[in-house]
Length: 264
Image 1 (cartoon, helix red, strand yellow):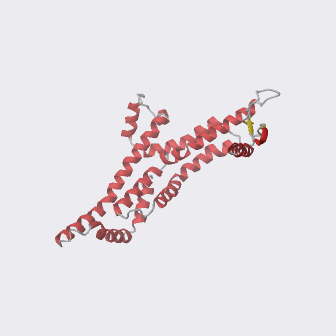
Image 2 (tube, one colour):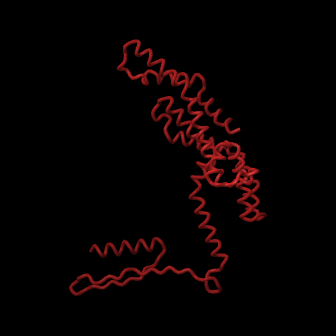
Image 3 (cartoon, helix red, strand yellow):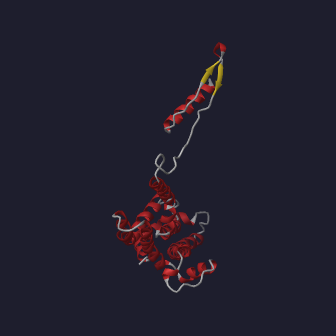
């Protein structure tokens, strides 16, 4: 019985994926189950020519495979080669400095960072669309030219946010000669330099966010110790004052405005 159920499951699985199995079922004397032959599956790719696949069709298939490979790298490109890294780190520092545990939740932090990144990167996307995507769709340029035109605005954005110190560090690590112009800087050197610069800038902004809330924590702790209430957690008393200060100074507007202006 188990063999029959297993065979039926395999049959329907193969039918789902579009493979027609060929198998034989034999029964023994007295209803005994006989030998089962496994389904035979044959995968064949015709050769290029009159009877097989055309070379152009194979090229299109390879292009689709390459496109799917690039799409798998899209999350890394979105996180590491745009303004997303700095924004999400600063907002995470803000939540920790407030001491509000999981408020706002991670989904809100990531969502706000994503939309702010789209807002900051909009001029760059427009350049890519005008110089690379639209001409390529209109068949005015080839793939190599479209890739080069799309790479130029992203490199320009990364150069604007990369510190020379970090760029020199990775140039020395890669043992590359000091370039005379930005065009001579390899992209594989520019990307890690940009990421490290973004991390440094984000941590500097996070430190500045911590200072006013740290002062509130110290004042509340000193008052509680002076009153002899050492068993009462200072964070419990300081949190309402932090929230009140953050609301009164329009904290979200200041933080978001500072983040967007930092990319100017």
